Image (cartoon, rainbow, N blue to C red):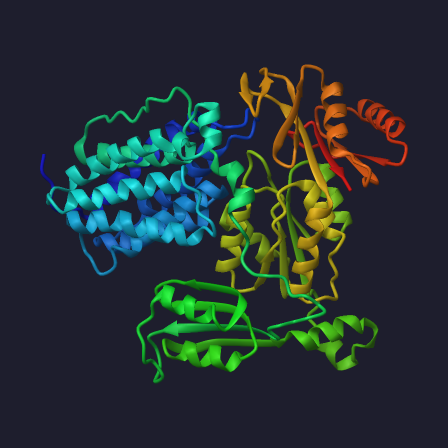
Length: 559
């Protein structure tokens, strides 16, 4: 079969079949997790993310493939959930950008779209980890581009992409030690392979097998993100502010009399990286938005005007802001009148009525129900930002798999938004203790982020399968103790599991232990645990809270 042109109707059919393949295999992907915990939701996240794009494509009435590509990218962006969903949305954002100006694609165009998708996705991740979905996307795109040099048949290019993705996926355990230890492959890459399978099946009308040689598969991206996916920006120190002006500009590209250079994202970002710190550059086809701390805001504006007209300018003197914070009681009447009714809004992602109430008691304005197995989308977070109706917004994701969606929402929003990289409920609650509604956004981000290191986070949950990891034998249905992302103990008896986990968390510097019991635990059992800990560690104060959270029988914090 030979196909030399890919039209909008072809792409629409490809997306439909890909969505079907991913949807029917979502639970399978969910079950492939490195850790045997009941929160392997990569398949769900990728499926919901891709479905959002597919739904938008299905409703589109366009004849050009570039227009349909924009619909796919927009739908994925708004529906992106979890780290795997965000990376998937970035892959197809680049895929769409490569189609610009094209009514249809030839084999070279098609291969180039995969390559540009990879470039965009790698840029979205601060420290890309090999052996994940990124590797599968990159290596398959490379082989597809090579194939396109020797054929004009789009089907042959897609066959090469699928086969190369399969080979790359099977190799992921050789790139990440934890995958090799458990004997599995990356499930984010497996999810992507199902999408590519759907693309090929749509083009050929024939069923494609994408089973790997590995018996089991897993997603290490979920456990790697806490170490390898950083947040944007640096904290501003109150004692020594090197770059004194928080500068934000928005440039409408290619517009105005001052345009003298063609916009290139990498060149633009690298130049601004030399004039300050805390740099954030977000761009699409028409607009580039810049946030940077610099000593020379005029230089940032002048540089931006080389590429288009300035449609938004904001400069804050952070040294003056700091002085004002230190003199809280001396704010003038005029300044008070200028303050909006709601200067701050704090958003937290949390599951369980009790846990949600704890956040509200500390000043959180908006709760997004979710967490493990319930990752909110970029659009969910954007809606929460809007509902806050605040001048400045702080987001507490409280889960490593929600952080990237929160960052993406912050970048898309036209409001001042920062994300605190809280990976657990315990970290989120502790961060709120440092929140000051009189401080500026950067100071709050600095202080709340610093608090994250002052708490140890523990969870108790059930194992969903037999396995062995880090030398620890785990039996299905055992109660596992997890401390800061590492499984430290496994017991058939829940009481023993909680006590052993606490013993590994408490040291001579520990002062306060908080036990938040979930919907499967009881207050009586929790109080019994608290009494045992108080007796064993006389200098430690133990608090008990009802969290009503799912998945984790206990959430534990030690400070």
